[in-house]
Image (cartoon, rainbow, N blue to C red; front, side, top):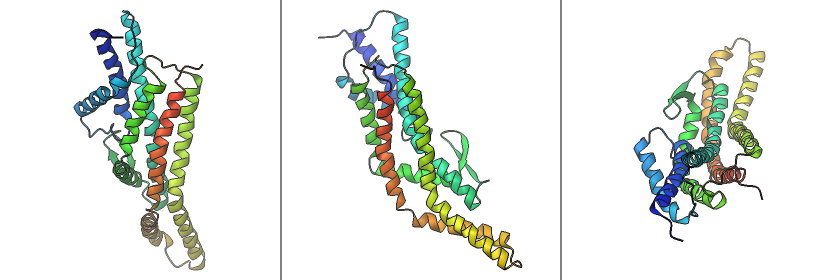
Length: 258
């Protein structure tokens, strides 16, 4: 059935609201270094690609109903982007744990995306992971997830349910678990270094362990990070699949129950 120009325009704007909300917060496209004009342009381009595959929706002439649907679509995009954002935040958590063990606890760098201080090693993990994620076309996974969302969650079909909060809490739990797993190899090596320094301090009291320990822990920590660098490919696999699966779980919790 042919729809009117006004209905087609409203449909495109609703598609644009969801894509824009997703682009604003997702880790790859939501970086503050990307100008706002570029984010809007990418969202509009993605909306043009997605538009033919979205089921038609017919609106009432009530402005409040249309505004409510637009707000729900925008929040849907933000919620989907937040699911992938939580996954990437585990890198900062891992870096914070490693920094505390290496002696970099007071060393932070400014993250231009959040405009906050982030751990040094966490920023390193984040940059390397983003580069590898883009190398393996991980951003295609995010685009596929936003396109898949229109099949599972049509325009105006968003329903906020109790399971959505539960799923977000589970995403927080997964973020902490992944962060600890990433930091565990390096932290374990530094722990055994601390143990060895403690034994030396008891057996050789004349040695100033505090003066030797700090540069030694930094050196051991950096060497262990180089040794476990192949682990990044396992991390990328978890991010590659976890981003898509996490977004789909969020979408399913916003679907209308049969």
